[in-house]
Image (cartoon, rainbow, N blue to C red; front, side, top):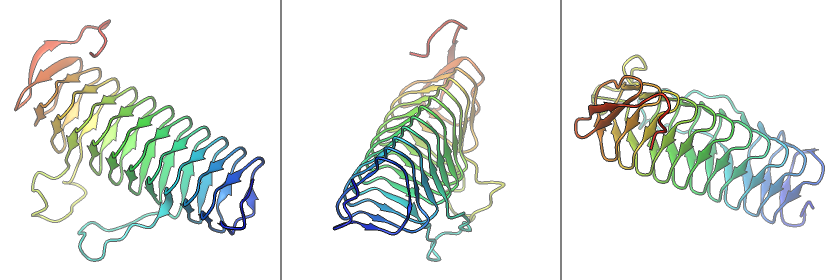
Length: 247
């Protein structure tokens, strides 16, 4: 049901059985698939494509334009497009910037912020109050839990589990040298990695496939594949066997 009496709907590219709630704003150029549910107070800017069977909860903003205001040394660069795959859910008060692509069957929970040039794969879970910074790639079947920060220029593989309150960073100079893309690098987290609550993953670190980072560890150097690391600084304490689950 299109509740046009209180919503602003400028697009005519609307699929079948679409519901748009009160006080939502859907700008011209938006494409809505079939069976889409848009709850009240949602804003969707031009260039956003919503797949079939997507549900968007109140207060979400899709297609936010990044602003630098002169306070950011990094050049702001983006395309005015957002793609949300089929069967996704976008939680309340989530902000998705322009130049973001989210795969199918992915759950984005409430109060999440996703910056420009981010891709998120299929069957992912991005939990409450997660922030994902610019130019970051996240693979399929990956879970990122509450209050975790994923830094810019980060790469996260498939089947990764990142627990609550995890911090990732990308600049060992802590902003004192300005922005240089060749120097400012986030971590590379390979397929099957598990990271415990409160861990801190420092800039440029690579974590090998199927490795486990224990809770509250500070990872300041590369971790080989299939290792468990613990402590500050993190050190290898044992191997992860081929048939062992990362628990």
